[in-house]
Image (tube, rainbow, N blue to C red):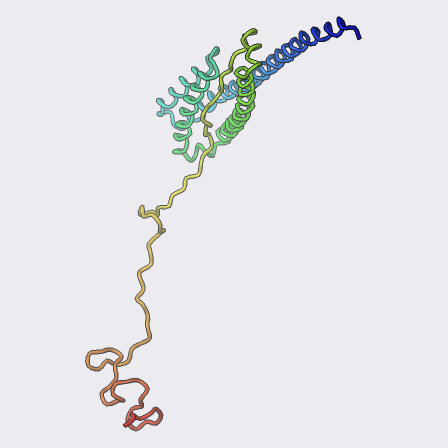
Length: 248
């Protein structure tokens, strides 16, 4: 093969390999960015479903606890702030935490009204909100996994060269506290008198039962009468057989 052809092939390979790598890396960034955006849209859909459930939930609770206006106003303000568009994932996470805290106080109010917890519409709303929270948590895990992969690639060398050239940036995580909308069972280890570790009235202490003592002699219960074998057991009373006489 001609030397010129060999040199040409080497030059082509030296130029072509970096170009192919750059194209593949760029396409990888585009794929990850689209995955992050798609995952966020899924979270956004579930968040808006949550916002739609809250007014109906408030109306149901107001029918039984209309005087709890402070809690209702807090939930309303937190919902309005969380539903405001244009927030970054980090800001959205803080707003969702505030809303979750307000909802927790709302359900604490509902706990004080047993008749409310038996209303079918309230139970249905609570279950739907719980299912929505579960879907939000699943979407958050999927979103954060894609964000982690994108951020790792943005910071790694040599892909960070392509990231800097084409303005691929780190994405923000969506990290919230898991909201609790379930009615958690209350566990108490105290009885009605507030005593911990025992239930009801404890039984009266029973005296230690031993073998019934014999008649006492000389102030000693269970003793032996004088003259009966020197006060030692195993010797018969006078006139009775058995036993062994003292050795003389």
